[in-house]
Length: 384
Image 1 (cartoon, rainbow, N blue to C red):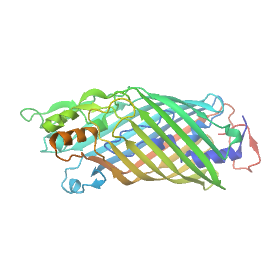
Image 2 (cartoon, rainbow, N blue to C red; image 1 turned 90 degrees about the vertical axis):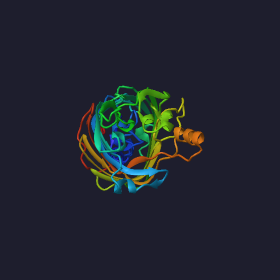
Image 3 (spheres, one colour; image 1 turned 60 degrees about the vertical axis):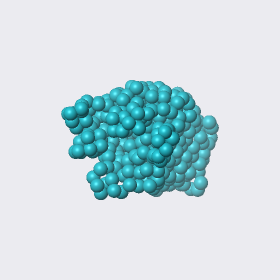
Image 4 (cartoon, one colour; image 1 turned 120 degrees about the vertical axis):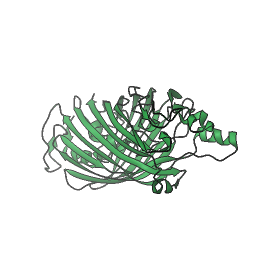
């Protein structure tokens, strides 16, 4: 397959806008770390046969603003009763070009999380719990519906993947002032910082781009994670906080999805910028299987600016989504409790103001050559 300078420009424009880290969920106690099984990295997924792309994506957020429904509860911060999560995640991935249209990907995620709270430690003092380790490994494959070489101005890819329950879903730490006599106890950490969710999952995803004007492209991408397993058997100890929370004693294994749309502009042959919107969500109910057990459904709408640098076979990408709307809707267990007690109930969740997403990748090309910013009419044997 022959790639022109124009193909290189297309990839520069779209890569940073539809990158694998771009599908990391927004910072939220409800929404855990996850990305699509095959990613939505255009630069990684537009591969010639035999090409290999390897890279690392890093994400960080601090969640601390509490919402019930769409209403923020600012008194939680002013009263020092807020829950504070610090989440660090590294995705090490590789993508292989099976041919010009088919590609396969594998992702090994590592996480380090901490959670500071009062209510989990007898409500008498603030303490911190930790989790770390391998999260849920993802494997997948994707396909470009149109021949990439003949459709440089627009194309769409679809993919499927599996999520393996390799992450620990029963990670534990010390909780203080919670024993019968106020002594410390070892318990599972909160669902939001568990490295894994304990279920086999399947994803479907898409990515699309379309030229709008010279050096300007529109983009869109998204994925949905199906988690058919209802609960994973890990105890939450929430029933010890109140008898009405008995239905939240075991952790749920929730679905999750993300959508992105926006514009990408090439400032130069090496640098591109983007501005878009993204929507990340843990739904109230799963599409397949039951929805019992404890979950914090939540969704975040964010403005998503980004910048990317491509030099030869190396690409750097930075996106910093900023939340503009956050919601913690009524969960299945909230509704059950409301019906049983006759009293309104809607649990809360803590969200971040922004998320830092950074990635670096390197391409091993079968017919490796360097791309120089030469005139578009010059054909290249491969895209780097």
